[in-house]
Each structure stands twice: as C-alpha cells, then as structure tokens.
Image 1 (cartoon, rainbow, N blue to C red):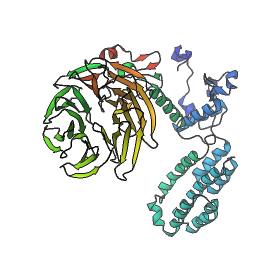
Image 2: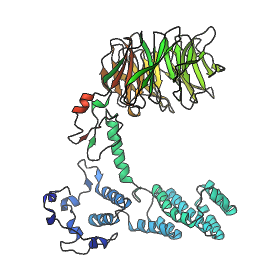
Image 3: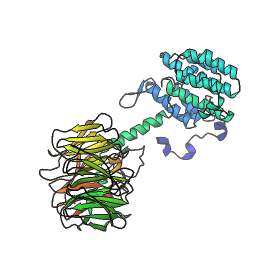
Length: 581
C-alpha cells in the first residue's frame, strides 16, 4: 500500500494466512512461511538510515522518541502484535525491563515489590519517588480495608504512608477511614471488587502522569501531538471561518479569502435617516437597528439568511442611539439621545415600559444576565439600575460614565464597564464596589466586550482600535489600523468563528475586517455611500455581517458565491474549507 509494489497484480503479492497471524503474540516471533518471516516482509531501514539518531527533514525529531511514541499509540489502539513487532524490528523497546516489571506489579497488586522496583528505576527527583510511593501505598491501604483487613491497613498507614512525610491532609483523611468506613464511601473510595479491579489501571494512569515521560510515555501522546499540529494550522489560517470542523491529516489546512463575508447579499432601506447602531440578537435570529429618524427596527433572519422587517418601534422624541437585547432575546431596550430608555416585546413590537430620570436624560442601556434588571448611563455621569417595572434599585454616583458612552456588563453580572473619562475605561465591581481602569493616551469613542468576557475592543479618536485583555492583569494585546475617523462615532465588533475577526465601520464608506490574532487587515468592503457608523457580526452564522451607514441603509454581507464555485476544494496539498453555512 502506497509503494511501487502496489502496481503489481495481487497474485504477485506475498500473503499471510490467518493461521499464521493467529499464532502471533506480544513480543513473539512469526514462524517461517513460504515467503520468509514477517520481519523479511516488512520494510527495513537501510543501514545508513538505521544508524541515524534523528528523523525528519529538519533534524529535530529523535528517532528513539519517535519510535517509542508510535509503539505507544499502537498499543493504545489495541494493535498489540504490531506494537510488539515494531519494538522488535527497530530494536527500540517501549519501556525498560524494570518499567515493564513495575507496570505488571501494579496491575497484579504486588504493592511492596512495586515500591521496591520504583526505587530501582533511577528517578533523580526524590519528591517524585515519594509521591509515587504514596499513590501505590494508598491503593494498598484501600484494598486492605476493602478486604476487611483493618489492622493491616492501619499498619500500612502508620509504618509506610506516614513516614513519607508528605500530603499530611490526605493522611488525616485516610485515618478517618479507619474510624468511619462509611466516610470512605462518601469520598468515593472503592468498596466493591469490581470497582477495585478497575482502580489499578487508574492508578497506573496517575503514576504515568507523575513519572517523567522518558520513563513512562503519557497516554495518547501521539494523538495530542497531532491535535496540537492541527490547532496550530487552524490558528495560523488567516481566513479560517468555516462551520465545517473537519480537518484532514493528509493535507495542510488553509482556508481561502472566500470564507470572509465580503459580498452584499441584501440592502435594507426602511430607515428614513442615518443608521447609527445595529446589533444581532444572541441567537442570531433577529437584527435590531436604530436611526437618527427616531425609530428602531427589529428585523427577522430566516433559515436561509434572508432579512425582513418584523417591527418598527416608534415613540422616541429624539434620535435612537443604542439598542440592547435581553439575555433570552424576547425583549429589547432602545435609548434615545439624552432622553428615555424604552423596553419592547420582540414578538408583538409593543412598548412594555419607559425608564426615565426627572430632569435628566439617559445616554446608554443594557441588561443584567438574569434579564430581571436593566441599567442605564445618565447625563449626570452616574449609572442607575432598575427592575423591569421601573423601581430604582441602585445608583452609582460620581464620574461613572460620559454623556455619550457605551455600557457593558459581564455575563456573571460582576463587572459594569463604561467610559468614565475621555481617555479611560472604568471596570466597576458591582458587589465589592472596587474599581479597575484602562488608561489610553487618546480619547475613547466606543468599546465592545467579547463573548467570553476576557477582552475589550476599544475605538480611539486617532483611528486605531485597541484590544485589551481584562482577565487577570489588564494588558494591551493588539492594535488594528486602517479605518478612517475624523468627526463621527464609529463602532467596531468581534465576529466570525470563535470571534477570530474584528470588523469596524469607517468614515470612508467602507467596512474593515482584520484577523484578530495577527492584526492584519484582510478586507476593506466598499458599497456604502456614506460613513459606516456601526457593524454587527451574526453570533450564530460566521458568514453573515451587517453594517449601518449615514446613507440610510443597512447592508447584509455574505460569502462571495462566485468565488466559492470557482475554488477547487483541494489544491496542491492544501485543504480548503467548503464554506457551507
């Protein structure tokens, strides 16, 4: 298979009878057949190759490690005979004779002998020897208890486990098992023969994790290396944005540019003035937009990705600057410029409640994760929280937000995030009232929070977008450049598969798309005839992007169907995703 011999007729190929294969066992040799031994049939390395210590074109893979990992994988897959022949053929044993003896002693329950063998293996780290001995003797202790040999178990605890002088808290737990065996059951300690029999292989797995990999190769090491290679290929793929999760081992993975939504599939023209904001619902089935025309619109996205008007929301006396979906997508908030916040029912389009502060205006809005509270930024720079029926629950006074500001709350409800100075973001811990901040050197115009709550995307006055990691120590991760912004409020968003891309509007009427990891600009999408104020990427469809513009339209962007049809799915050893939605 795979060699020049495959061109020969089947009759010319050497075959082995089932009887000959049945006589094989781990480590045994094959009896001679008419065509010679199996060893003669297997491809043997040339003498010069066999002597080499490294394999592979880059000379970084050690032959011994490579062969041992392959043998380990064969045994793990159940190919015991093949694994044994690989050891014999290569002359490279998977494990030393001592490690093989140690493994068998563990499986047979020969605890004292296994501890003695452990000391002979030659481990340099005494802490590892002690930790491994503890695991073995702990198993001995449990099995003695299981066999109702309480005095022997007590002796093991006192004379073998305690003298190791490690893991004292665990020693106390074991002591309690002598006094109250029922506690052992509560702690998950085995109490039946069937369970105990399974615990020895589990003990071996735990020892395998503890001992150095040069002594015992970790389970599924080859699979881990292959998965790691596939992950690296996918992460390095600039355009990876496919719902098709399959990746082939036969070819290197690389998606084409056609995976990025770059073709206008629809133009929505129902607003009568500039479109200032838009946002897809969490389930991707709806799109909400707001406009200078003092209205908001709920759009419905059908199964084929077509967008149609569902409700026009009217009632604001000023332009609508912001919308926010409830966590279950059943309701939506709309915010007029320094006016009121209205809560709407998505299915009926009915206004359910109007939130307002006497003598003040509201500038932004959002939901808490349970959907029972709403919060708003106020023109006096405070942040207020209400229940659904308008009862004010809490108000954070002082410099908490600006007159025009975004607001976000993390999905655990812990942090409220706002712009509280021209060049600074505030992260307010709602429970402890502690504060953290992000300081920029340029004025901040807008920001958005990633779906996993770990990153903030910050738009700046100097035409840059900054990506900040807010998990743990706050740090700047990446910068994105290329968009144009001189006068207007421009918004950006995360998007695509696993939010691997950044999209933004721009005053030059284009939509810009960057690869999030590399920061490289990969698309500048023309089409609008006015400044693009806002963009939103459908969270359930990585191939759908929406943009709202001063030209009064919303453009829905999808895949370039022509390019998809022209692209061959396999070319020169490179795998291309199929792009299906």
